[in-house]
Length: 410
Image (cartoon, rainbow, N blue to C red):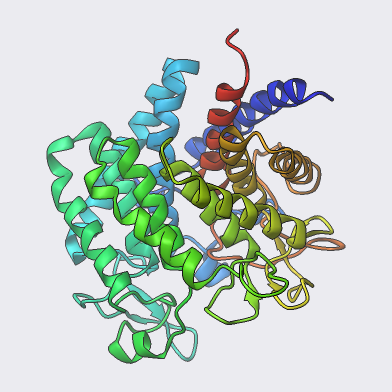
């Protein structure tokens, strides 16, 4: 198949799959009347119930609601061109979720990984029971990042006057990453001891680089400038690009051996979203090399292995999550429109084919969360709730943006 034919076919697949997922999600009964409900087992297709404990409807996950709000708002903007009536339906859901999530964030002056049935922040106790999480601390987490991204995107679309406090909180989150007050494992008490005990991974800068891309897209160039520092830090501290035979992989921790290739590829995608046309060509080339190396060394079996060794390039996990393949579509597509490099197109094609062949279920429009080499496995990559159009949907929108830039009009 020619590149042009592949791109045309892929665009149709991305629009169709995104719409299918969003329709499935909108048709499900919301949690607490406003929150997204993607509590389904991706293998059995059974809804999680009270007997499923932490997977069930008793618990709300801040990650999912923040990601879902960003997805609803961003897809509504896209479908304004493709299907205005569907965009209006997405906006109606987006406004409800924005109001609910705004109220929850403002109540605690922050976001949390898990909330109980009374919407109180909790963590899992030693016996598996919910115990209160610390609130009102000076620490930030991934939940803050995902929820703030969603609130900023939604406020920009629905209520611009309410945006400044969330922009200020995003600036404070960036500061927390740079001065050691960002706690990566938020399923523990948020304490100074927890912050001091963790290793410095590139994950926080990678995720919040996505916020820099969002801010720039919203016309907030000055507020997004931390993106340059984050890209420079990851390339300087984590990218294995020196020595006699560098792997060109991005190491989870400086000098460490473990590489989450999906996170490295997600970093490349956010970097390509953020970097403008006048970006330093050396930085763009570094991003391209890291992307291609991460995919080529991490791709085996049904998809991308969760972790590989920087020293050997071999898998160090039996699991192959779904999310890294759509993230590859975005990263490879957005990198390709800058470089027109054959390797990035090859990566794009392989990721696309593997996702739809090995993960996509189509009815309903969801993906298996995780596979091993023999088939789907019941392994939760981050939250038990299924993807609310974030990793898959927003990544495919990045692919569509690349396709529209590459194909001739008409």
